[in-house]
Image (cartoon, rainbow, N blue to C red; front, side, top):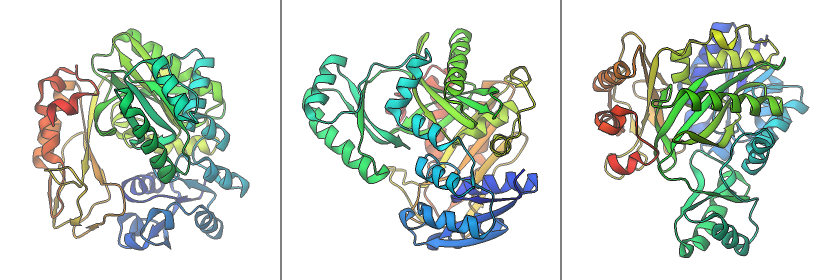
Amino acid sequence: MFSRILIANRGEVAVRVIRACKEMGIETVAVYSEADKDALHVNMADESYCIGGPLARDSYLNISALITIAKETGSEAVHPGYGMLSENASFAKACEEEGIVFIGPSSSVMEKMGQKETARSIATANGVPVIPGSEILDSMDEVTEYAERIGYPVILKARAGGGGKGIRIVREKDELEGAFSEVKKEAESSFGDDGIFMEKYLEHVKHVEVQILADKEGHVIILGDRDCSVQRRNQKLIEECPAPVLSDNVRTRMYESAKKLASGVGYVTVGTAEFLVKGEEYYFLEMNTRLQVEHSVTEMVCGIDIVEWQIRTAAGIPVPFTQEDINTGRHAIECRICAEHPGDMSPAVGKVELLHIPGGVDVRFDSALYQNFEITPFYDSMLGKLVVCADTRDGAIRKMKSALSEFVLVGVDNNREMHMRFLEDVRFALGTYDAGICEKVL
């Protein structure tokens, strides 16, 4: 097992990893930007180092600086969290070349599964159903040709995309050229890769993902599934585990598909296979080669510390439990609390003047907030994740309503009231909602 880990991230996920390391007896090294000098993860870690200016590109995305600090502090491994460099194959490779363990899959696996068109090919080769789509598109002639062949509506995607960026839905031919240009520009600025491909856009589908844990001996365990269909502008807002109204037939087949994908590429540690589900059919969407924001809901149901086992499997420790040991009998719901103005839902900033966190049995708030902490405009607007678990889905909904009603955050505008609207909506209550629910509720 590692004795010291550098955490190449910030905020809630850095705090989450530090807590897991403390429980495992592992020392932690934090990095921070000038804007984050008073951040919680800076104070919680055993050692902390300023890595650059407020902008992520000057600090948290500086690969050479991260490697230098890891080496100087004797960190045997680097945990990338989620976002930032967590799916950057170049960062994983740089760690490997310096003899530092990257806590995630190998750089070669990350490169294959991180490029969405390559991941589609791997899925097809392993018998996993995929949505009709294109290869990388180099010209408008190709874009137009594929759109006509696939049929509108279509969706343009950056191959290196993530976090809802580099995506445009196109419903008519007249929108195609402008959307293609916008996606290429956004992909280049966000990911440094303007490779774009196209898929058929499926309406009225559920977005369901399967949590994978795999070790170096080839064992692949499915820890459960999550419904992530409540999304606004391709950003997830509410997740629940397990996905409601999913038939046993679809669930069994999806789990087998996820295992085939992981085994097919020699996947190690934690990952997520994402699918679109329509009735009794499902289609591979992409694979996230990292820890997911919403891993918390799965932990609440299955009772497995996913971050701990991500670290253990990266260290070469085999998974000691089997698929039959995984508990799937309870239900958990997660609401992402974000700093945003209620009116136009634009990101908000401010100082935390008053914070009251709900408590009780099976209530959890993963966050890096504290009294008087300053929310700056430099990073993602998510402030924390409110998670509850109960024996039934109805019980989980009631518990989440109670927790939200108790949650108090003064000084920073946030989306608590928006979550209450979703939980009161009859479509959400029935579990029959799909990825279009935001258009109906908001």
